[in-house]
Amino acid sequence: MGSKLIIFLAIILATLSSCNKEYHNDETYEGQQGLTVTDDRNIGRYIDQYIMAKADTCPSLFILDNEKYSALYAYLYEQRDKIISSGILFSQEDWSWTIRVFDETDVEHAFVAPGGYIYLSRNLLLELNSEAELIAILGQAMINIDSRYVSTKLENTHSFNQLTEISLGGSTENISSLLTEIKEVPYDLSTVETIDIYVQDLMCSIDYNIQHYSTFVLNSSNETEWIQLYPNYDNRAEVLNNQTNTNACLGQQGGQEPYDQIKALIQ
Image 1: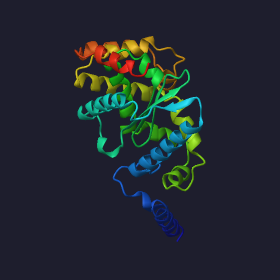
Image 2: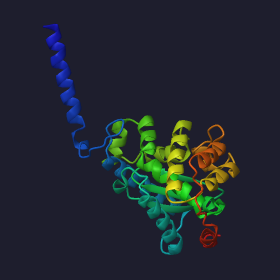
Image 3: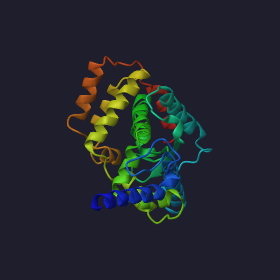
Image 4: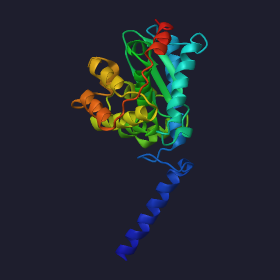
């Protein structure tokens, strides 16, 4: 009788658990805690709304207008589409792939929110020296979103109930902490190294030389917000260069001249 009672209780608990998550079974993919692609999209959209509202009230934060900087955004979306067409992404149709360029005092940064939202700082764009370097940074951001590293980071630090409540529009109290997490808390070194491998594959597949990326990493200060978010693992620049030689990935494209023209738009 004891064993039958245990089995019966296990069935009841499994049923209740299934009922609690029933409205999240609309996708074939689920994250560590059962979050779906729809959850990712919703959470990212609410974070983006929070950032846009904050930009309206914070003197030190400014989002570059799509119309005023139409040439800049057209160029960035052209590079985005190039990455999408490379075939390096797993579920490219699931995400919005929205790009925002922000101007924040003395900040050189690139970070992402779940669902396809990419934030590039004006100062970081000015630090880049070529289209190849931009492809690496933008590719890193898109690979992060597509592989759900940013979503996993949030799942590891926030409860399932907190995240689903935000996804369903029931609470915005925790969005500030989500923004801090995605913008300031570093990814672990193994994640950064894995993303770098995909970036290498991306650059090879569309004929960009990886050495542009390794040079940018080598020259970036450890105080740069982007490096703090994606910290250097041991001999990172050297590893990237070795991959260039190992894979014979000596792409011909660098794109310094067209990128210089784009930088002139925001100087």
